[in-house]
Image (cartoon, rainbow, N blue to C red; front, side, top):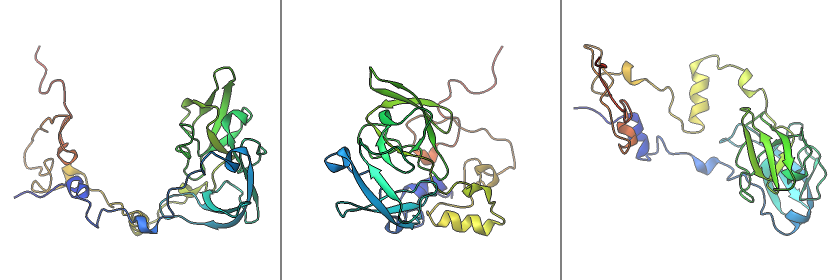
Length: 241
């Protein structure tokens, strides 16, 4: 009798595959773009902390209205640094302001795709995007992402100036498999991942190498755990002349 595939077991949401969200610092987004956070307000970094779910460190900021917020720390951030948020903020490292008010060629990160979503892209350690051009008439700003792809966002969408701290994280290799195992375990990621061809026939439709066998095509609406063959191919088999 065959067994459930790994993807099928993961989909059940058992503790082995469930994300340990109780250890995470929460959804790190910008404050709502209203009131003092829109007009302009400052705050001081009081601590730099680690979040197990993300590669970049977080900066705990005590604002002038005595609210404490968590934001992704910029490169060079230090305890005691002053951070400004709002349309009238100075274009300094770590400050948050609309992309339309950031000069062309500046590095930015944690960019809002839609106005007020709190920041969705360029959030990994050591990454940054750059402002390419502004279309003042249409209110659009063009930004080049780390992948070299260029996107257009609303000029009122917010972003942080600078690069994200934690660059060079991937330069130190995992010397042995134990380090990779603990790194994956922190986020409850399965490690190591074994390919279907390397398994026994009872463990996976691709397993067992005793005789050549084809991969059965599957439909697009097949459950994820059963998508192990050609995904909805237009044709299969040897092409006839």
